Length: 123
Image (cartoon, rainbow, N blue to C red; front, top):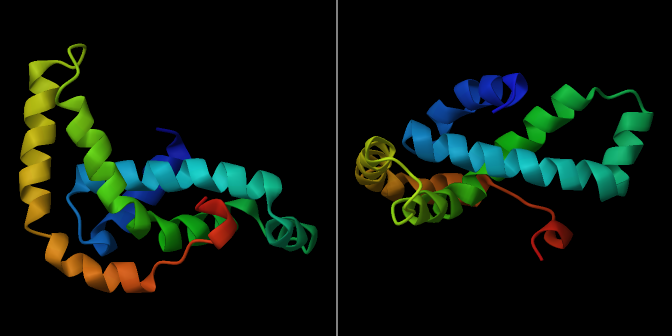
């Protein structure tokens, strides 16, 4: 994870109603989507032309989009549990995170209602 992604993860994780590992994966997914968004989106290009800093735009985007990726993050982590190349220690950590995260899932309705993703990026 990049230094910026790590900082974003630390600042956004508490508000995501998710275990830290699940939230970190969701934030990483949102970061990847931002890269595509920044490359093809006219609104982003216009904001950059107006002098808005990428760091601020990225943080805003990730904060709004990461909640949408919490279930995808759980799926990605679950898939790692069946991979032979993943150590048992890592699998145990993932397994524990998924169990602990399961208790937080009920609170995600709030996060889901507040998250927005540009429609053209979800296809």
